[in-house]
Length: 86
Image 1 (cartoon, rainbow, N blue to C red):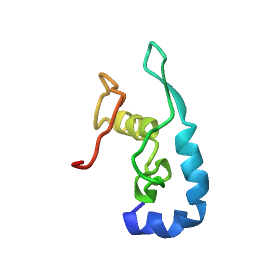
Image 2: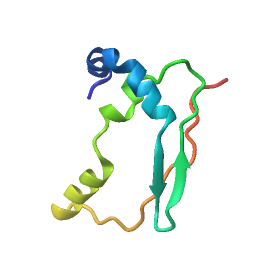
Image 3: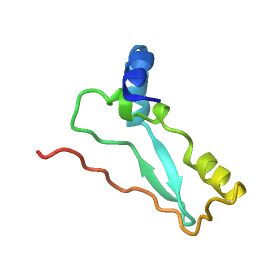
């Protein structure tokens, strides 16, 4: 979803998206490393950066493999994402 489109379509869901981002709990990798919650330095989750605007990565990778475009050798999982200069 484009940034402007995300803001227009998701604005009415801002409170729910903020809550979802605080209660995220996922297990990653073969060792099932658990990551819980997302900490941000802003009052609200930026709507153009929330999970609702991205395609499911597993589906994208499977599509690429089935089409013979790519072969997934390893999967990396983020531990931190820092943005900004302050």
